[in-house]
Amino acid sequence: MTTAISAKAVSELRQRTGAGMMDCKKALEETNGDMDAAVEYLRKKGIAKAEKRADRSTSEGIVGGEVFNNGQSAGLVEVACETDFVARNDAFGEIVAALVAQRVRSTAADTDAFLAEPMNGNAAESVAEYVKAAAAKTGEAVNVKRTVRFDADANGQVGMYRHHNGKLATLVQVTASSPEVAQHEATKELVKFLAEHVAAAAPIAVDRSGVSAEKLESEKRVAEAQAREAGKPDAMIEKIATGKIEAYLKDVTLMPQPWVRDAGQTITQLVAEHAKRAGGTITVDRFARLQLGAE
Image 1: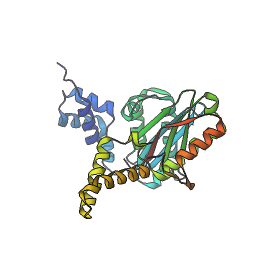
Image 2: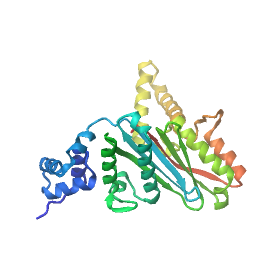
Image 3: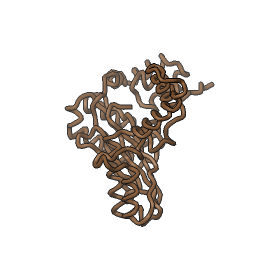
Image 4: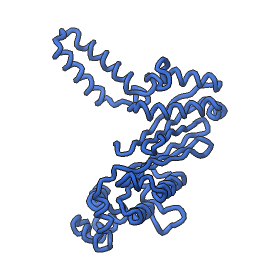
């Protein structure tokens, strides 16, 4: 009887060995879920060298990206390696470019699904196997840390910002009141401005609705404790905490933030201005921010 292999077990083996997801799943199937035996299985299959490299710190690399489909789609891939020397090498750049091209063709929902896909141009090789081969070529550990893709409908537009050093990239998706407004030059300019702002200001959500109740409750408890420590009367503590929460939301959410190019204008005002120029309305839907080494 074949032992059912859980996603958690596959993930654990992947962490221990640095091997690809499909390799780990097969190793666990072959060893009836025995973790230590699966490690030995992978080593016997010649993955020991890759395993050793995967244990090294991968703090360098490149975040690659591309906008396509008439500005309605975009994807990012964070590819890590060990040294800046390799990250700046043309061969590593080609590896990143191939993975970005794969992301353009891929509709994978997450990084694991992306790594499990057949590599474009070679159906016999998964993306994970391609990355493993890339590690062998560079002599360093190479990992796809994160990947994201945005797809908008005809009323949408996606903007991308990629920092000049390749270590930070962002995506922002908006929805306009019509396809014509979505394709207007003012909207295209706006999404680029927004992506640049997200890179610089690092908001945690579009607006307050994107901040979890748990996070707000935590901030409230901190504010209340600080007020008590400062000797404020009990009757004022609730009001003080509420004020601090509002200030916190203004600081960490995108829409009320001062625009990095003009601190006298908020992002809400920037969006309204560009929507007016485009002849309709524009709503900011979501953003993604991938910075090398950050979670």
